[in-house]
Image 1 (cartoon, rainbow, N blue to C red):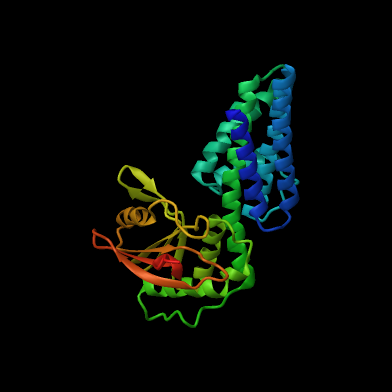
Image 2: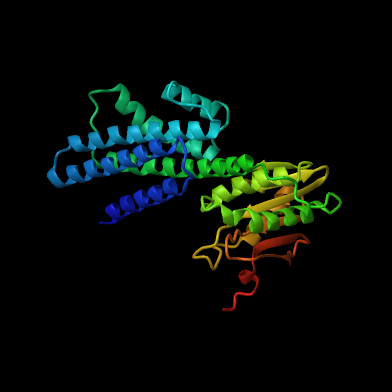
Length: 319
């Protein structure tokens, strides 16, 4: 029962992530991906119920289809190119060689390709058992889910670019960099975010903020998931904005249940500031339609400052 619950949860998460993406040429292909995964689960259940072990191999043939479909639609969104005349192998090579995909996604891609897709494609005598079918389903679901997040960020970026927002009149070039970014984020939240329901995913908001800051502050450089050395680990803040010697780290956090934030983003940002060798960071909590964004400061023991741009009720959580 536990395994079934896990599979159903993965399908639900995948369905929600794909359904949250704004519509486009990729939509039909992603629906096919979800369908292939659903059929793979049905084959797995059939094998368990009837004892027909060929159903487990059938399940992996379906996850192979979901794997290739996920990569094709990711290629379509991330590169703005039509994948129909490009082989799956060429798409994989392009996405990896051009560093289009983030390292964590490449890890999932490589794992599925080497453990499931290649063996089942190149050895027609191979049979898979129940455990292998289960692992293949979990692996391809995980890949499709993390790919959808990167696609959401790209679609959010493209949505802002398509509207061509002009440089904000409230963002003075004479103010310190962090103040200019805060002003731009307040403008973004009040004038743009609430009008775009497709920005329901945190990753989509990151992409939209990236594009909005580039438009509102054309003199700055905006980097997405820039690698920072944080002790023995690599830190990857959502955005790093810099101009000259000034640097500001930005982390976007969605509200859980519209009332609270998961985890301790202030502590997370404090680590990013140390890694980026800067003293200023911004925590942006998108509110959207019906909320009023405010900005307040939080001083760190290390001497840095976090500027929190969030709905006003987070500063005063009383009913």
